[in-house]
Image 1 (cartoon, helix red, strand yellow):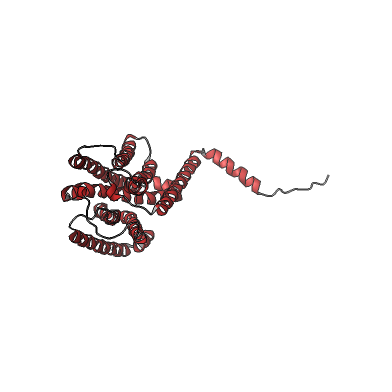
Image 2 (cartoon, one colour; image 1 turned 135 degrees about the vertical axis):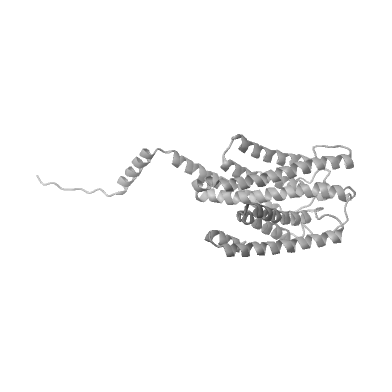
Length: 316
């Protein structure tokens, strides 16, 4: 990550960028090896508890980042993916009690490897895509906070973000429908407004509204960037909040306790950062909207106020 940041700041650090990409690939390979070994030991996909799902999503975030980097040759995808992966891995390392790494027997409803693989992996892959978009959104918000005019003019960055959001919506929609099929098979109903189902639908609608609003021209590229960050809070609620905060519903096999302080700190800090970026963006828009003559008059008046007054004595 540090190597890629330095290469990005130097603009011409192609060799450094290649080294950073190579290191990221090696890290991805190590993580993939660990996931495969866990699957072989458990005999099932690694998504049956919060520890496994975070490990899997962190891997998928970097994997998606690599795919988009290979497709568009944009290192910013890796700059967005690597911090998310790093934070996720540090999180599970810091909370061994709330997220134990032990491999436990499955509850009866999860013992169907076909639906466990199809539904849960699809849902968690959508979380990974949205997490990548969230990381991407933070980079763009930082650019808007520093130089709103330059950030607004960077069309490729917004296009790349839009592509990641499209992938996430596709996966979440498919995963939600597949979950309904599995629910009908296991519980005898396709949809029951269970908290997990409801929040998955809320997250899906949030992102659909984001994409449709941008396509319809309801908001600008900046609105898309803000939504890519804010909408992830709905994913966070569907993923963590239902299991660790609400603790209700038929998806009781995923319930747990702990981590509220970390999550609350992240949410508050994230919202404050979004508010700051919005304030900077709106301030820049107001500055641009002032007519040039008026700006010149204000500048002259301000300069006149700063200059000391010189009194000249005239003898009669």
